[in-house]
Amino acid sequence: MDRRILLLSSFAPALLNRAKGQQAKLPLFWRNGLDEVENTLTQVIKGRVRKLALSAGRRPVHLIAYGKNDYVPGTANYGSACAAGDPAAYRAKSGGQRPVVFLLGPVHGQEIEGIVGLTNLITVAETGRDLRGRPWPELRANFDACRVLIVPVGNPDGRSRCPVMSWVGAALDTHERIGMGTTPEGKNYVYPKVKRFHPMRGLVVGRLGAYFNDAGINLMHDEWFDPMAEETRAFLRLARDEAPDFMVSLHSHASPPAILQTAYATQAVKETITMFAGRLYSRYRAAGLPNRKAVPEAKPDGEAYPPPSFNLASAIHHVCGAVAFVHECMVGVADKPYAKLTHEQILDIEMLLYDELFRFARERPLQRTA
Ligand SMILES: [Zn+2]
Image 1 (cartoon, helix red, strand yellow):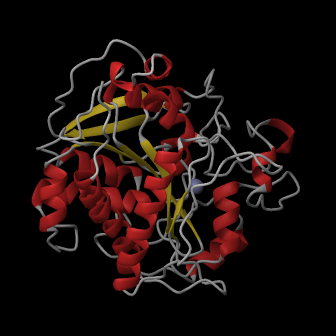
Image 2 (cartoon, rainbow, N blue to C red):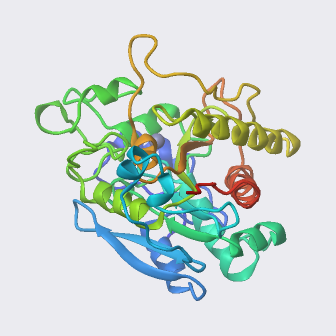
């Protein structure tokens, strides 16, 4: 396929012209198109590939699983086990178990950087090197010591609606328009007001953004007790069956990379997220990448109005007890005040996340004993 920035002819001419200005050959390691992911899957030998679900638009949501699954089934679901005062009745974890790590690729279709990261991580798992040829020996060793679940594209419908292959040097306005879509008057939906309409359907939609699946569902904000999206059911079922120690939902935004705190998780889980964020931010600092000093705090929810959202990370935590959180990569748009970034640096942001996460998972697997 043409590896240049692609725009479908259905997009407005002005948008097309702007994007043509950024056309530059993309590096070979920059793989995030649905066909490029399918191609990566054909090269998987060590892992097992299966179709986890069909999206609202009838596209496959793939899962690649690595490593032995050495758990013993429990006797209760997580909620009932907690009510029994014994979370181990759901799934015992001695602290010496093979950690289970679940990486959920972008559920927002324009946040393509996480797909780039995961196609590179799959290549590390298979060959020891990323798609640049850079070896990751410690990451490989830690990865091999875990059970790893990778959903490279969380929202294939949204990804198929995003014609752009790279946001490096693009205008934030274009990122918003393709990502969050437009009103019938042609105005961009913007964060966070875009979330006032959900499902995003009917008279409020001009062009449906890549945020949503084909049924207008933002998979971060489904109805957790009666999911609207089959994709959501599949993610929750996978988490319930596999009992991950850690789950990361991969996202991207314009500002420096971040770990987001998970609302309504336990204090212990929140403190673990705070600790992990501190370690990851130090890695970014040491690598000369954009970074934050302030880590996400572990504080009580709902003390002030408005209350925080019970989102996908909260929901995953509540079906399995995992340390579940959101990672935000950086997209590299040209607008001030955001830092200019290269494709190499964006891949480094993803790879350092995985490197630190698998190190952390081996150091601090969940402990859940009877
Ligand atoms: Zn997102």
